[in-house]
Image (cartoon, rainbow, N blue to C red; front, side, top):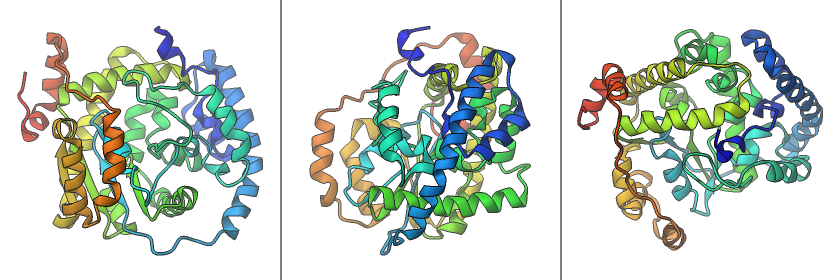
Length: 368
């Protein structure tokens, strides 16, 4: 395995930051392969310590004045590897933005107390850049929130990262809303509302910007919590997305899984989730008021990032683009995003075509 990919293998999982009750629930429900026993034990021990210290966090949060004059949140939707990270990083340049930090994704239960203890350790342990795409990492940078949510309650699609043998069952229950109980959905909603408030307090912004691919299948739940929320859906050529998703998953899985999964099953599950996720989005997006949804393409974002961000501010947010323009220009001057040409093996295109042909044509891409 390349050295870059090994950076994510620390002998523990990100469940070390979970509430101990969540950790125990997941391990009992899904199990683990014996070869990962030490990883499970070490993660559980840290989780136990983190959970004990979390009582101080609850007290600090309870004493904090809750945010006022908060703007409607923005949810960036789209399949993994579709450009959601790039778009999120651009929008978070706005000084009024609130977001989930990378630190919070691992230690959401210790956000307002003991951050001084856990953050330096996290900075020492984490790599400087993300595998596959070389995106820079830092404990204070914007990050998607699903790992954080997974460490607060057990009702998360990201359970699959640790227990990949159950990927489809986890997707059906916690992503596609096929088998989740009413109690689980209610607890998720209550927790998410509190989670967003904590993000706003932590980063001191007034508009929460969410980048979380699983939310692509949660439009009904999000609209119940935030009826006037804004949504941005970004799509990318499905062949590129599947190729990149497979490479990305393989680079991260090695470090946090506690079950083994074959290459064939990983690919099959990627295609299953991709198809179901986009089909659910196409069905649920009709619930969003037309003026609150903007659909863009990754190619357009890469070709004209400033134009795309200005479109978001003027057409969707009805907000002042000049507030972000200077910082955006400075950021883009240091970036170099280009579209790449890929050659795909016949067996790869055959699998993608069989699973995603309709999505490929619906999104106006050419079937290979």
